Picture 1 (cartoon, rainbow, N blue to C red):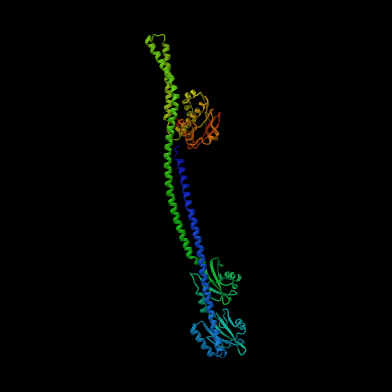
Picture 2: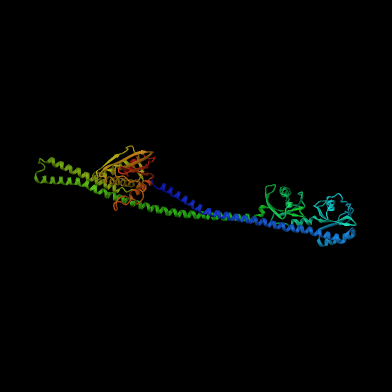
Length: 575
């Protein structure tokens, strides 16, 4: 099976993690900065809208109160300057009404003089209200108690909305009232001039919550809750302008600004839809959202590009590293072969010496007598047989060495570890003999094949066996045990020696690159580091247990493939 699947999965996971990390690191500050700025802008804009509405209502509060006070002042001036004698004359009164209408337009509808019994004794205006009786009306009763009185809007005898400004005076010890009717349409237009946006409008209510002006947009039923809110909170006892945001009866959000009028008898309320008041803010927010989305898309795009480039470079670096690791493995293998050369040379020299000696003996026999009729024919035949045996032995030894040296294929294939261990043990027989080391093999014959690289696993076993032999040479001999068995559904290979052991302080650093306890020139410190990397690359684990002066055990744990069978094993051996 190829290595592409796990490697591809690793790079996909790496790409995903890098992409998510870049996105997270990029979006978190952008999000918080944008949210903070937008929040501050929203708060500031909200305050600005509220202040603008408060200023608008306060301005019109002054205008409406000024309008009423001016009209009151005109009636007071007329009452004081002309007196009862002149004003109870209807022609004189009509003349004064014409002058007022010429000055103020149709604001003043009519004028009337009323005696203490509530009878209108003089009238100037478009209605037939001469001798009208007001003694039972609420406004007349209130006007008799005050010097100046402005009534609420009511229908009265004329049947149309209007309100009255009444000024009480005294003539010959008896009170009398000069009454002026203010045109409702003119007053209503004055109030409805308060407009902002598409939904803003104003209206006036009295202490009982009765409307003193008409409502815009036909929203009368929606005003009940806000009227209860203002009246219940005793806004009539306050000064200045109050601005609140509340939903109406239908649940739609509105902003309300309220101010007192007419000596705290009326309440001016301005209403505007929240969506309308904050329309510019909402539009700005949508623009910010669009910009954020576009910026986010740009961040995502750049993150994907950067991730692809970085992972590509990492992949290239890993490939280069893999090539270098393979070169290191091959170099280590050549070093191992060099270490084996001395022992193999001794093993080859012995049979070669025998072959040479026997060859000399045959030569002597051939020179001294006739071979065919010789009595030494049997000896000659035995010598030739010995030559063939020893020659075959030399051939086997060199074949094993060359076979091992040529197995550099790093492809993943099915491997029977028992066969590999036997071959390697055979290579080390002579060195072990000279080191006074006995090699024991305890192999599980039912051991399943595994998937791995032949050359890489050979390199691991060679390094471990070399280290064990080195450790036992210092003790002048020992036992090297090579074991295989199954544990937790994994194939286990143990290389156990009875050497000097490893100090506990060095165990944690044993697999670190360039860490070695051998003298300078005797070791590079890369052997166990390479072994660790090879086993990890095959999905396995390598552990070490050691006691000083008792020995060391290296355990290699390799996973078993589920699809291993005899056919696969045969294929692996034939490759």
